[in-house]
Length: 120
Image (cartoon, rainbow, N blue to C red; front, top):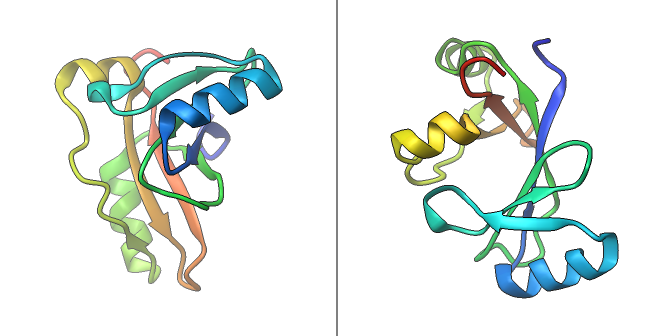
């Protein structure tokens, strides 16, 4: 269903330390993330990820969309912006995790858009 939360992302300074902390705190399990950056998180519920180089970041909540490109175009029409997240990942990462865009609404609040992989 479009617009439901589908993914969360934690930004930390050091993803290895973050993995140790959140793994011990919540019992989450981790595996290497897209393109070898950070980790994907298995919570038993909403899937997530953790990435480094983002000390003190608030958690990012990503909302499901069926067509990321069309939704980004509409977002921009409404006065929102898309943050530069660098590369989107190779074909294997996109097939496994889907596509993501980190955005800001027309007032500057951060949220994400997630187009899950085909068939999910």
